[in-house]
Length: 124
Image (tube, rainbow, N blue to C red; front, top):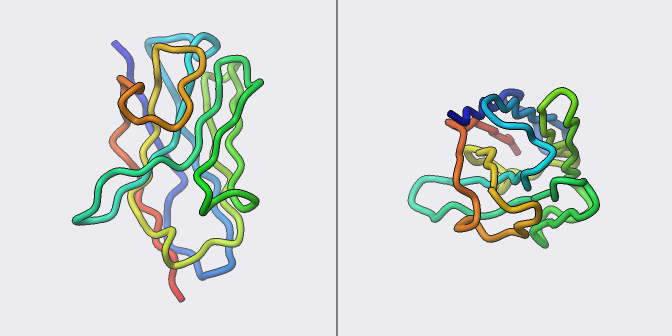
């Protein structure tokens, strides 16, 4: 059974940085595209970034390009999201997800396994 556990969320001031981690168990990450998504109350879940199984391809939502970086360490079965220059509008619950595809882009419908989420709050 696939299990994804996020960590690294918290409260940070605008302009600050956070690094989210997602540790996977029950699968070998090498063959799976991984993604980060976020959701705020009353809004649909939106994509943030994804990375292909080989790390050859990365995808970012326009609003985070140049500020966020997704990476993975397949040996540690871990995916990261480095978030810099954070803005109050980045406040959300951030979810890690795994796709059965090697490359899945930013379509949340292509991701089958989801973590429980970690809260990120950016104060102004």
